[in-house]
Image (cartoon, rainbow, N blue to C red):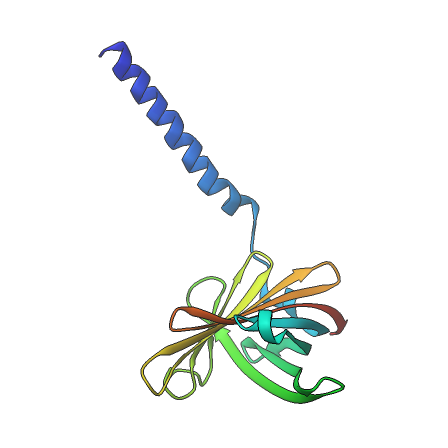
Length: 186
């Protein structure tokens, strides 16, 4: 074996060892939180932006999130109070509440939404936990055959959580909400 071949093999082995340790190390160090770490009642507010926000401004949202045990799984209930549109001194106020129940899937840290099996009628939904983030994904097939995917990332931070909502339709981002919530109860 030539000196160049030995040098090449040694370099490749070192690169593979580095790449393998880089891929394995974070997984070994960071463990995802159990679902009960997310249990509680959280309240806060955030700002919603979309592609027209530059021209029409942003909307403020007040948020209320409850996460708790339900059967063999858990539930997530969230209420959004949307303030925007109409007279600036007296904006339109809309209130939306949703609730989803989840049961453990065979895969670790993955949960299936109960009663949400048809993406045409109810939306297909699931949840997953990665590190300190509980993500809920909801996919809906539209009447014209397109799709909408909504993702709610709830990351535990300090005394509360950060909520990042992303709405994508047919591959195009439509709206994002970035909010901070504090834990106000169990």
